[in-house]
Image 1 (cartoon, each protein chain N blue to C red):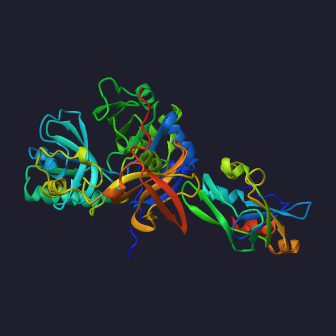
Image 2: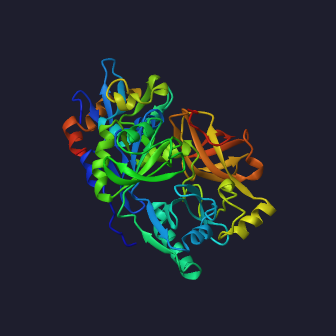
Image 3: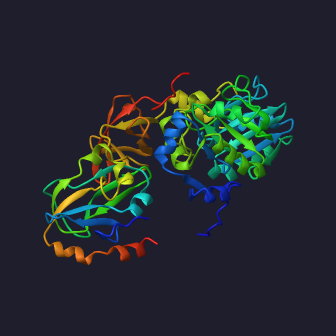
Length: 126
Length: 367
């Protein structure tokens, strides 16, 4: 299962990618989308909302069940992916790019270092 | 609690080999999803999908009392003018009208009938049949054939054409709610023109040992293998009730909206209770609703509110890909049952606006 090496991962199967502008793009992993099955609705926090590392920031509904979304970083939401409102299937089809969920301006970008690196994340998905 | 080992259908090894995701259901290890539940639903609505439903109970009832036994335990009219090869849907009720199970009775020949029960209720149905045989209908024999024959549902607008291409099945003779015996992929099978998806199609019952080759043959002929996840949404879209969710021993057929499957001109177990409900009027009834927003899905057990007071709970609820909206069923007091009535569904502290709609949610386009 694909695990890009350019980002970090949480135990709850979210990924966090540090962008050039210092913001962190967040999504769910290939493993997570596969476990969930067809995604039909994502409830994300609003722009300007505060999110806290390890705490609930929304829900992801698949055909089968609903799951909580946890933020992998602490900070302020600066953008949400408008495309997944009309095309939630992007989370399944392209979890690491077009199916991203939110972009957060982190209080401390160093917080990413405490997340799992790709090798460590791979080990929890096996 | 004692954990019983899971049973498996004769197709289990093949499902695993084909990469299907398996889950425990009604005591069986069953296929829930082959690829994508949404993809499987689309295949059934637009083409043809196949389902392993071998977990369902298949009982043969024969002997000179067979007809009378079935007429007593089942709410449909099994007594007269039910010709060979006909099938009738109905309910098995307790004396108080509570629904033990729902199922289809097929007349196979003069004194041979088949009753198909829900997997989770199979043992209970067998005991119920046996009780009444011993009590009143000694000349009936009840044979549980669940493990000897498999059952594969082939459903969708292209199902009949596909089945005809690999069998001697004649769709002009075997119309909906009829059953026949014929060769399917050169092996003997029963073929019933029934299903649980809202589409045209059949349920093929071959010998257990012939089912893996038939499953492969159907896939090779273009059928999409589907799991129970898709089946549950397909049946909800068509407003086909699920026993255990949408009805059980605490509701009667009238409350469940199944009046048309109760033959009041015959004598069946529970008839007096049903008559009393018809006379007095039902207190609550099963209604369909949809949510106004597409977002959060109202699922089973979510409270249904009117003016912030709970008036019922969701029996079945799901996102319907065919209609692109969230749909559900639930019991509400009569005064909230009219289509157009505004309801609120509470889901994890959120309040979803919903409205009562007529059933079914989906009916297939006329050919």
